[in-house]
Image 1 (cartoon, one colour):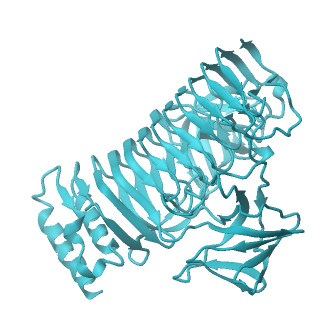
Image 2 (image 1 turned 60 degrees about the vertical axis):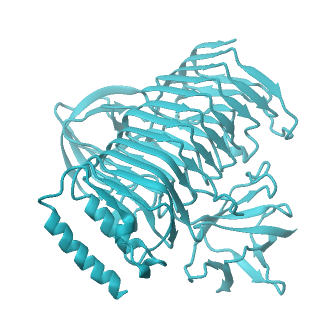
Image 3 (image 1 turned 180 degrees about the horizontal axis):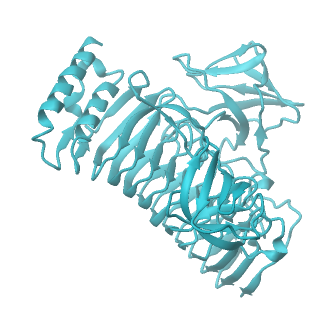
Length: 567
């Protein structure tokens, strides 16, 4: 690797010499930084090219249009707090901070990673474009095996070539050819022919490794109480942690991701925090084409928190990810202590201190989740990654109680989800929690749980929701709800954890019209705590592709709602 270190030094000198004379809009070609001895790990050259492009605003980084192998040895390292993903020290390939006007032109390049690497981390940047790029890994963070035999509390599994599977202290261990161990934390069965979650599947969560036995034929027998499956199906081992999301965007403005294929990553596909104006256009989160892989991203395909401006997903395809297609919401911080007349101690999740001086905050009742007061933040005193003291510009409301949630009300994104395809994943489709205008139109859903879910709570996930204007129109809902029974009570459903539902109208104004429900499951709407529901001009087509085996037969279950029109 002597040439690599020499290149580091020469490039560093070149950058220093060019800084004063480099014009805006510089084009940097990655191929100029990759040498012959980087065939097995191109990252040193990629990193130098990226650092050169970041020296000036409005630069373009151009990839060569081939497959580039990346290992973690020379990757950037940083400790990250990422909402709904595992915090910790990350190895990052493309670390982009304080950039303005950067365009990454992929030219169809595949970045092929080995090991625990986060492909992209973008912070405090604006006018960022990433296009025509493929992301993949030589070995997946999840694992999988074909079910060869089934017994009472055991399965015999055949693992694919390339897996190094053995028994360590009586427990199943899974490694790749580089001896990297991939811990697992769950089991989920997939239909071996349809490549979708198995019919009425059980969602197994593991709190330790699996007892296992190596068999003479090279297969392995795993043991778990009540474990079952179907011969010929695929048992997927979920990654134990959400260590390495595909793309992380934090505190950015105006982001376009276009023609990008994310074939795998070790966390959420796209995790977007406090970003104003973002569009995913023709973005695919799908398993590697031509492979036998059953999982794409090991968690949600996309996830958006405390965003503003516009949020668009157009002509995207999200399939086989290990969780929902998207989740769009704000954050709640929970009142833990009243310090004085205008100061409270709050707890917040995932280490993200989202509160800022001057921010307008809502204060809600923790039993109804209804907003009863508004305050402006004067100052914040951070205690640690979970606690902070927040002082407001005026006295606290008299009705404030311990456990009452507070949240930012300065911005909510206007959401457009159009022309997208959602199928074959674990759990649900779209979790909608923005208070801006939301339009969901001309999409295809074949998800094993609820296609559209309204959540928001102050007791479990601490996700701010409470929609205000949602249009669901001209979509195809094709045989959804075929998976685990806990993944949803209807095609369009409610799951906010509100203890006093009769006194809550947390969500407002949803219109469902012009859609087609091709379904074996009669449950169309299950909604609660809404003020304003309109269902009209929809078509329900009965399907026999699956057998319905739930108790509820009513297509419309409406509880504690006002102003309901069903036509």
